[in-house]
Image (cartoon, rainbow, N blue to C red; front, side, top):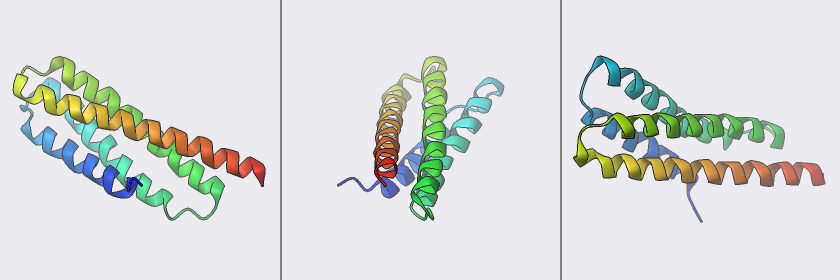
Length: 120
């Protein structure tokens, strides 16, 4: 079984490490700041979803994770395209793959939770 709490936390940390390796520039800083914000929100909101008070609350919290993971994907895509350091390309692609996998898992979890809610 996947420990999504640990996985989303690792995604947050790995994103932060990536951002620390990117050059400081006026253009890149905006994207780096957004990636840090959204990737950390993925981990924090997933954690919050685990303390949901009801299935509806769980779904609402996971919807936030879905949005933040999707926005993380967007900023990773932008950084991948404008990155000039080929040494970082593989690391960026790996994080982009992870953010897409997290997004897919969260979407599937939302679907399952909705189906279970409808059966009640």
